[in-house]
Length: 154
Ligand code: 4NP
Image (cartoon, rainbow, N blue to C red; front, side, top):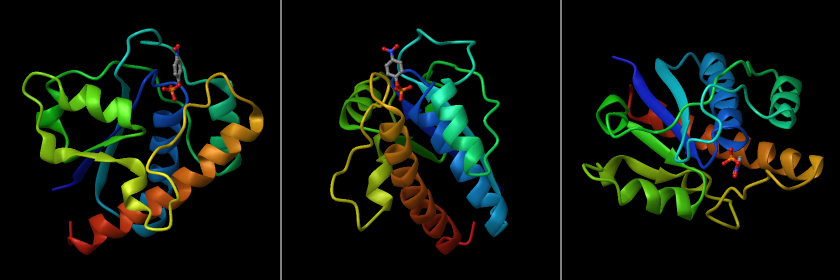
């Protein structure tokens, strides 16, 4: 059975699609049996492609970036094994939902033991450098998450 991983941010156009793309590349490199998706807590960008700045940094890092935005829905608590939030607001929004399976919800950077902060900051109103920084954070945290899943032998 594949391990099912869902990355969640606010808009599902900047951070969580990039996490999905990077984790997908790492999982393929390591031969992990996973199913991967991403979603936003908000609905503003449902049906839209990811932000061109995330598309650019993701493809430069060898990732597929052809995902389409969708909103998180309560059934995702049943569909996924790991629900991975980018920041504390995403974590709180998920944990407050009716029917939340809190034990499945993690902060992305909790999988990076070297991280100086537990949040992946929102780059939406930021610069190209902010998107590069986010990608570097996600590379480390996704590698840690891959280690964890591999360690569980799934
Ligand atoms: P994301 O960034 O949560 O990393 O996708 C954002 C994208 C859009 C908005 C906020 C954050 N927005 O307010 O539209």
